[in-house]
Length: 254
Image (cartoon, rainbow, N blue to C red; front, side, top):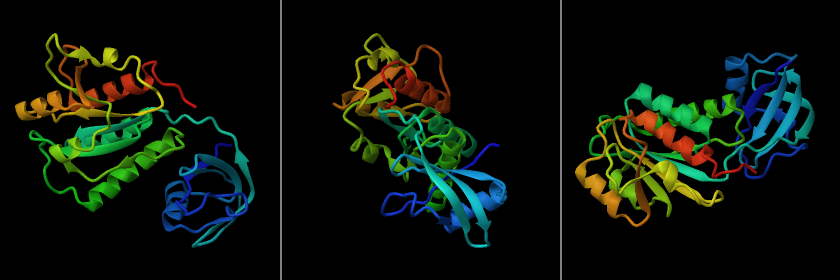
């Protein structure tokens, strides 16, 4: 029988066999009872994302405001979280494309996502805290689906220049047109330390403005790169770039 899978709510201290005897967090209960339609005959896989720990448990009782667990045991589970921590600096897209980008980036193993407002970004307003909460739910659901032990964080949108000031020391910016001075991303990532941090910059559907291209080109921590001669949609370029960074042979899981 397949186990129901959930992320345990964050706590000040790690979950233990002794502390994991009931669940009363409202969001967790909603997910189990309303979304997954939990029954007494079901079993659970409980993931402590903060500490990369997995527990199996059985259901002893289901109450309106809590679920009582029994036979809780810690489980040794391979950690599939990439050791290379990639933050995706992605220009905001229209909602449907953005949702796909969030979901698939999480499945590929992105560490964090920083939405940016670039000059050609079509969506400029309406991205308050409610939107950020919705984005975080999308990546949480994606992390559950792909059995990740980690939930990427989706930050509040930043203006291009503000985001550029915080980019990691090793960052790559994908450009839609290239000349002989710009190398393919597949070449640029060779020899990277797999136990490090990196940034991947993606422009809007209209690409980068001339001023943004110049800012990326002269930034000491950013290397402009390309994915070939084909013109890709922003969400496609994001996922292709992440695939090269995270699964292109430079990274090994713990």
